[in-house]
Image 1 (spheres, one colour):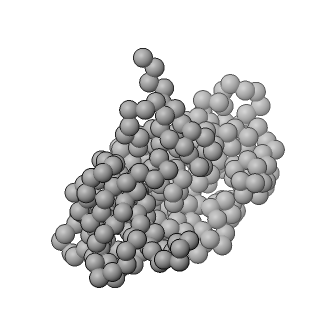
Image 2 (image 1 turned 45 degrees about the horizontal axis):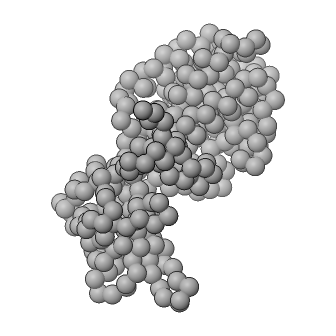
Image 3 (image 1 turned 135 degrees about the vertical axis):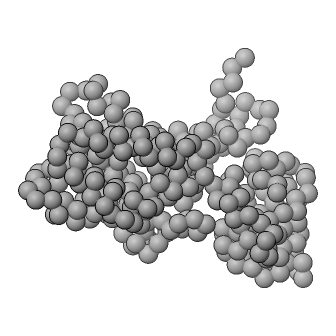
Amino acid sequence: MRYIEDLKEGENVIGHYLCKQKQSMRSRAGKNYLSLKLQDKTGFIDAKVWELNNNIQNFEENDFIKIDAIVLTYQNELQLNVKKIRKSQDGEYEPADYIPCTDKDISVLYNELMEYMNAISNPYIKKLLENIFVKNKTISENFKTHSAAKALHHNYMGGLLEHTLSVVKICDFMSVRYKYVNRDILIATAMLHDVGKVFELSNFPDNDYTDEGQLLGHIVICTELITKESENIDGFPEELKVLLKHSILAHHGEYEYCSPKRPKTIEAFILYCADNMDSKLKMFEDIIDKNNTQSNWAGYSKILSRNIRKSDYK
């Protein structure tokens, strides 16, 4: 198959892709067309169907479809002009080719994360983490392979684990460089900060918001999880519970980023900075990875609100 990351402007593409999004649109001239977002394991690409005729057969979101299209460039990004579409038939595609996955060893990542959990000295915090990551079957069975986001960053199988471990490592690095930091609280909340995404997002190939995700969100889900699991631990200190939940509630940093609280403890502020750093740097990395031009400039990011330059100094 022809992977999205390998597409080049001007080429004709005939192949199978997963349709992640399908919208019926109307142009300024009043003409109906389809706007699609297609996916394989290497990424996403926008596609447009300008001519709705007999060559465009019926299909829906999350269907595998076979397309005949031309690769174009629109606003510095590749886009497909699709001429033909039909639903793919069983046996014509391999599902694993359409599920993006971390390029890192998931088992190695998970073992590293568990080492951080086992190194926690506070018995209440350690027991809480064990209840959530080991005894909670929904989390223990899905955390390794879940994504960290629908679209913005680490939006692939293993992305949640990869992002969480990165945030834990950044927090671990910072914990010994400033006074007054409670390392156990910081490492624990770094492990927990996005665990609610196991419930917020559905599994692949959908990787879309669940009802819980839409109505509550991962921050609230995780806060409720801490409350529930800590109540199953005899003598769990109320003050410790509040400090843990505050870091979760504040890890998006600012109200405009849907953070219920702003960080008011040093651990909460470090967690916010670490989470923000890893997610934003992953966006930089993805933009540079996907750029296949010889230009020093990798393209404009709407999310980051800036043009990204590669640092290939010669």
